[in-house]
Length: 239
Image 1 (cartoon, one colour):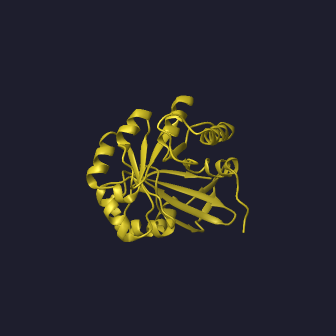
Image 2 (tube, one colour; image 1 turned 30 degrees about the horizontal axis):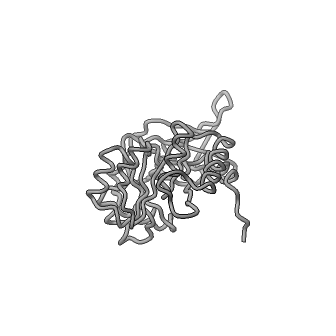
Image 3 (cartoon, one colour; image 1 turned 90 degrees about the vertical axis):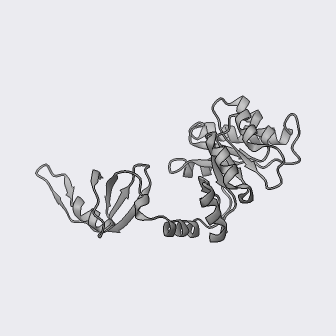
């Protein structure tokens, strides 16, 4: 198989495309005070990789070692942190999140009762549950109001979510984007949150205007994306 890539390479690949969560697993039992030297060295290496590849925006450190996160928060102001919460955790993760300035909880899915999720979200914390691979596991989490899930099968989760989300769930007005290359044209509809709600790759009619610029048939592109939906186009970008 392919050799593993290091963190710098992973950051270089992912950061331009999506936010990235880096989970640090403590080497041993968590200390009530202080941080194991090996864990500190791992934190040093992760922070250095962040600094080399664009800084600390758009990246999150998550760990079940909460004292490790506390130490990291004291070393980099404004570092985005998330608490990994195991099913047998006895400490209060929400109180700890407030203590260290974390923005999210990554709890075992069994902990995500409606009351737990409501309490966390009421204090402004994101709740992203792990690890969710079945429809029977996903449904109660959506009912509880989690913000997201960790899964080993993103394609299956995306399919399950698409079946549950009615067209009326699209947020706000839609923007049409057209990207034309040598291999054809990709048209996408994007809602107010920036999420792609529909897309289609094909060839869309185009012509050159009097200045030589390529002008594309935006109405035709939108029809190809969602042929049966009357949609209000709020903007069009092409290249």
